Amino acid sequence: MKETKSNIVELQEAKSTTVSDVLQFIYTGKASIDSSNVQDLAMIADYLIIPSLKTRASLFPQGSINASNCLALESFACQYNCESLKQAAVTYKCENFVAVTKSEDFSRLDVEKVKELICMDEINVSEEEEVYQAMIAWIKHDLPSRACLLPDLLKCVRLFSVSKYGLRRILDEELVSKNLACTRLVINALDFCLFPDRFQNMPLKPRLSIDKYEHVVVLTGGAADDGVKMESDCFVPSTKTSVSLPTIPYPCMEDAAAMCGGILYIMSAKNICCFNPKQNKWSSHDIELNFKTDYSVTFF
Image 1 (spheres, helix red, strand yellow):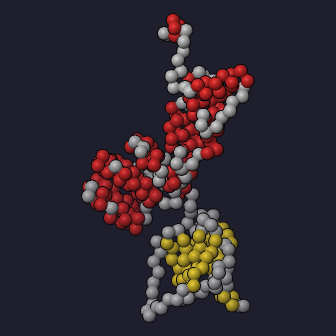
Image 2 (cartoon, one colour; image 1 turned 45 degrees about the vertical axis):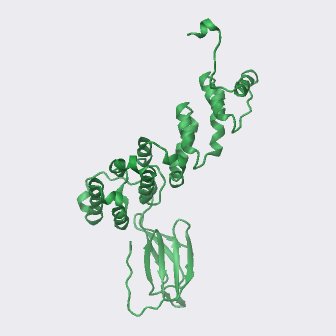
């Protein structure tokens, strides 16, 4: 190497203050690490092969990972082989997928990185439509150059996990409806909703966050000798067990019920009770409904 003749090693990307901090660590085992020097220290520690300093520098940013910086930190960690920082950033982006995909860094990702993210089983979403919405927002951020990528990315969205109403909304998207390949993908998913038996032998795997939810039967109200009950219970068919839910705000008997957006609604002529399964909590709203005819309730 040329340094054998010049006897000088130039650290061109290093700041003098960073080199001073590195020398302090070499001689004392101590390093002053803060947000202003942490990345520079990790870079120089990697270059000079000082694993103990690199480990300390990698640990510092993990306490400040957020939706705005986790993609940048992951990229930095990959570049300088900071495995613990990389894992922390990946875990954060999976657990906070929706917030991360609304960040500026996400909109600037290249298509391969976007595809890698939306293909992950581990991303945390309440419904598959959130993956579609993140993907379509990325496309629209630079529509002229990204529109052609839509069919390839739409294949990464697990459309079989989207409700028929969600699929109808996707078909209403002009970018989708005007693209024959995309339209075929959505129609195929609609076939799954209408004729699930035809897809029994196909390996359809939902996201882990969606797959963990199971179907249950919620039982509310009822008649007793001392009046109408205000109890609510949950029956789990898969385990044939029953779980008590919080007391319903109003007594319910012969009321109508519907499911919308993951919330259970119990409706009478004067009030609506809502149960949020994620919060395990009932809420109520006083209303005045004027029904002139009998009505029906659709579950979806």
